[in-house]
Length: 176
Ligand SMILES: CC(C)(COP(=O)(O)OP(=O)(O)OC[C@H]1O[C@@H](n2cnc3c(N)ncnc32)[C@H](O)[C@@H]1OP(=O)(O)O)[C@@H](O)C(=O)NCCC(=O)NCCS
Image 1: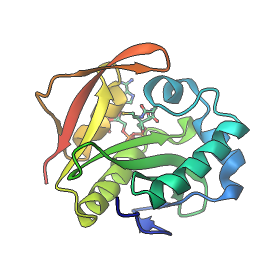
Image 2 (image 1 turned 120 degrees about the vertical axis):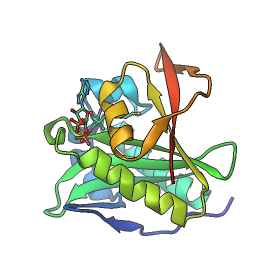
Image 3 (image 1 turned 135 degrees about the horizontal axis):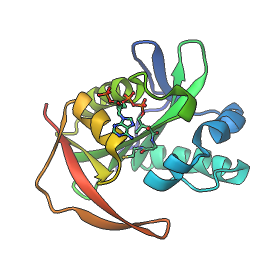
């Protein structure tokens, strides 16, 4: 697979999507280690120092192997407020996105705005289809998807084991 570009930096309205750095570890833990993120994502729980360092390392490998782009969401003032991921699916024209926002930064439209920026970048990279897989119980993420121009598809939901819990994940697709 073709590696993804290095040093990606995507400017949004009041925030930036940027590469992680080793200095992010403490802020990463503070941003990610909480119950909703544990429940609805594949990020490790507890998300401790070991998990943070593993995540950084995996991000570097995934970029060079063309498997995924893992970015931090930071405010223009520099505060780390979330995560964004875009990964290649089994269908190489289809990219799947995922996102988290720190509990303290929710409800300000950040996730929807960041998702719009990353979706546009996905098309720039050559993907023709961009999708999300959202838990049927995750109303906040469904609202984010709608706001960012995604719609629920009639693809059969996926029953997936998310850290020992059987989750029902519906596919959402961006309308370009
Ligand atoms: C989902 C998540 C990223 C949303 O972040 P955010 O920055 O608060 O999102 P936004 O502010 O852009 O939008 C949130 C929307 O969800 C709605 N919402 C929030 N909590 C809700 C709830 N419990 N039930 C229904 N809607 C809810 C808000 O009203 C808002 O919609 P609106 O603008 O139409 O009013 C954040 O809650 C999160 O990190 N959750 C845990 C990780 C996760 O679920 N990731 C997605 C995996 S698919």
